[in-house]
Length: 312
Image 1: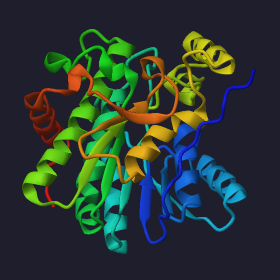
Image 2 (image 1 turned 90 degrees about the vertical axis):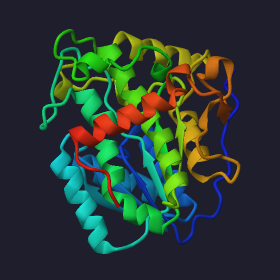
Image 3 (image 1 turned 90 degrees about the horizontal axis):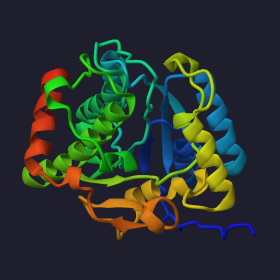
């Protein structure tokens, strides 16, 4: 029996400018498509221009009047993040929605970014931290909502404070969990600092539950030449409507968090089904790893040190 369709209504976003990282495929493409269909101007910062062009064609196929464009961005390179920030600041147009969605997951061996960071921590967290820093004035001008996409993996593991770059004992899953905990702590600290400093930004979190996305698919550039066993299991569960959602439903929590008038600053939005792995989006209790404001301050300070001073 086919599962019942799940969707949400996106408000009219005419006149808003949205930036979605990781929008060349999967959940990010679904998010960008819905935002564009609701009238937003959507920027797709991508590493692979060919995939980005295919994504724009897919969006226009579903929403022919969509206003979408590509920008260059490699979140594993601070120079690339800085270049995008400079380009958008030169355009001088406020940004109203930023969805920090891009991510990579569990390369089988430890890899480093151009800047020498463990690649998951450097891409999933530090790249987005620096991106927000670069865009802060535009986000403030747009009274923006920033939604950071974490993961159910942020409900396990911890921050490896003594070896943030996993140079001594690499564990791909633990490093992935750390990167998503760090991103979540940052998103919450961003909201606290904005409220205290009058930055005119609200920040919240989302996670997509479990769905057969490309995170665990074959990625030769990460040393993975075929889909993982986990990816194949999730695909089978999704097809049967057991625990796992679909790529279409997995995009909804971030969309809800980023656009709904009912989505609150500092909240975590996820699927509301069993174990928050599938179902319609709604608010859930913060994961235990995200509840310590001191840890959030610490990851902010460490991220400043590793990237650059965070200033408007």
